Length: 97
Image (cartoon, rainbow, N blue to C red; front, top):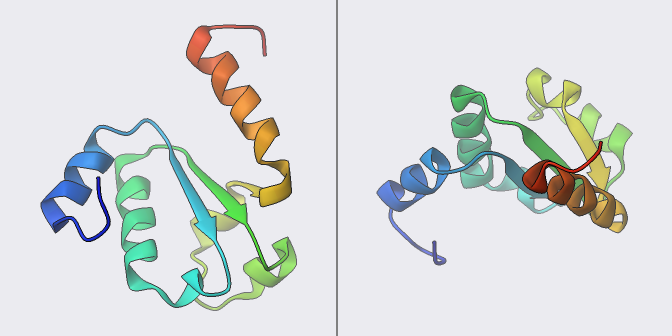
């Protein structure tokens, strides 16, 4: 999917997704499409992995716009993204947990 693709392309991308990795920055908190994509993933019941950059976990949790269902999801810092990729690779290849 390219920047500026249609709403249908976004729906198709979410339909074909097994997980949603969302980069949450202070600027992303004010972007409605970020919340639309998160809501679409939540409705599809796919895992949502929140990656924080520029704000901490407590700051993210305290945001009025942060939905309650995200507060119980996996939340990692951008600096720890390699750990997520290692776990993803193990799940994708059927390796040990």
